[in-house]
Image (cartoon, rainbow over all chains, first blue to last red; front, side, top):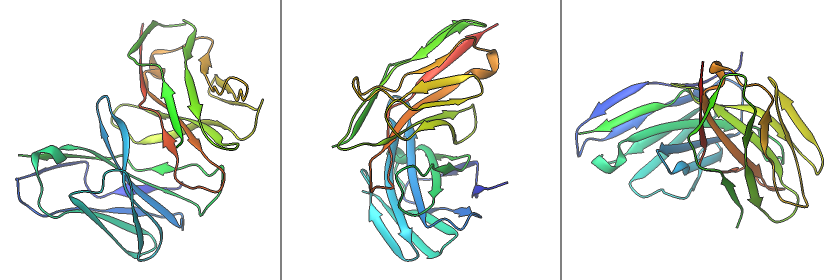
Amino acid sequence: DVKVTQSSRYLVKRTGEKVFLECVQDMDHENMFWYRQDPGLGLRLIYFSYDVKMKEKGDIPEGYSVSREKKERFSLILESASTNQTSMYLCASSLLRGTNEKLFFGSGTQLSVL
Amino acid sequence: GDSVTQMEGPVTLSEEAFLTINCTYTATGYPSLFWYVQYPGEGLQLLLKATKADDKGSNKGFEATYRKETTSFHLEKGSVQVSDSAVYFCALLSGGSYIPTFGRGTSLIVHP
């Protein structure tokens, strides 16, 4: 069964800490995405990557960075966590450019910044 | 730019009731259309999709028809179950793109 695995289900961090959220997919997908999900706001795209070492900003990249050193792994980095980054973070992957390729999602990481 | 508008929730129904969740979209060209479902404590998963006008996607008793003339892709189910309680997201993918546009999601609560 295909999988997108996020390293932590729940995470509690303090303001100012550097936070790493890890995501691994086993489907050899080229595209990987990081979203945050907040009540009433739906899904908002933070960053995406279409190849190793390639990254592009999504709709809300401020306060975040990403790393993709290997095809299967896409990391989201909060350089200095703030309370407004408390949210559910979802990683997803898909095959390369196509008009009907679905996304495969991980189970999410609920991050609380205190 | 592309956009997806869904009816606001929560939608609350009794078991075996008929379900409709409205979805309309704005896009250039001829996008593919999707419904994703998110069960409690899980990520999103694809429920159904349609890739061209008049196509009907179906899965697990849910259906949606790609209506180009009304730019809609409403989700329907004839008889909902408690296990259908989840958040449903409508999404589109424009031609040549691999970044989908999502609606804000509609929460469905089904009571026994």
